[in-house]
Image 1: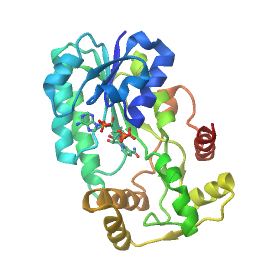
Image 2: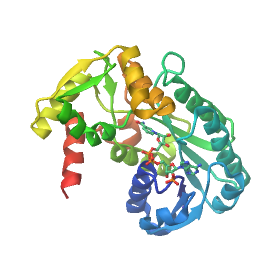
Image 3: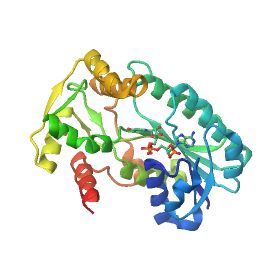
Length: 285
Ligand SMILES: NC(=O)c1ccc[n+]([C@@H]2O[C@H](COP(=O)([O-])OP(=O)(O)OC[C@H]3O[C@@H](n4cnc5c(N)ncnc54)[C@H](OP(=O)(O)O)[C@@H]3O)[C@@H](O)[C@H]2O)c1
């Protein structure tokens, strides 16, 4: 059983590759990366794969039975063709199963919707490929909030446009457990799973951070317009719009979805408190 993971040097790709290695051993996992040297730390065979280059994937997917496609980071319109390059090369090489890391959320109503919409298109492309498939719709990662905790402490608050909306966060480690099972077990074929944990408000997030970090953070709500302007000023047009779009989505409960995590992973999702504690412990190691 040879399983390949794209973007294998990235944070999600490498976490999934490591989980697969513990399940099926180094000889059965192949990492694909656009700069192969960057994935050597995994200690498995690494092949070259730039999402913009179909030829790379025609070579990289030789002899591969199952493939995990990590969704691209590029602009929504570019992503669709990048993913098609990989899917076409998988078809040519007779790959038997594709797992795809999609996203939960609303494909119409907020500034993050173009990203969600492009993911839905790739889901369709995979379903129409004739290859067996399983799709995970990932929740919002909790890690970026935890990486940002020093900024929250400096300002004493979490400030964004989510208001009272709830977000069902997940973590890359939780996702890795689910994707490894989804790749290895046939019972997941032709399933679409929402890979999320429990839904929480930003106020609850602040309380949980206070509990773990001993802080006194409060939550302050911004209007959608003010937050969009503030984020664009800090992060630029593209990323600022995406990030503020995520909080606009949270405000409208676009990420407050029913979880299918247990069906995928065979165990319940960690609570938000457990994810925050795990993140802090891992940093202290
Ligand atoms: N659910 C969420 O909250 C959330 C948040 C952020 C992103 N995402 C999505 O989840 C994906 C994985 O996230 P992550 O945390 O692992 O991000 P990450 O650590 O930034 O990794 C991104 C990976 O994509 C690779 N990549 C970018 N462009 C590529 C190309 N043209 N060809 C081949 N590889 C390319 C990067 O390779 P290089 O090192 O060579 O650049 C890197 O390995 C993202 O790409 C995005 O679609 C989801």
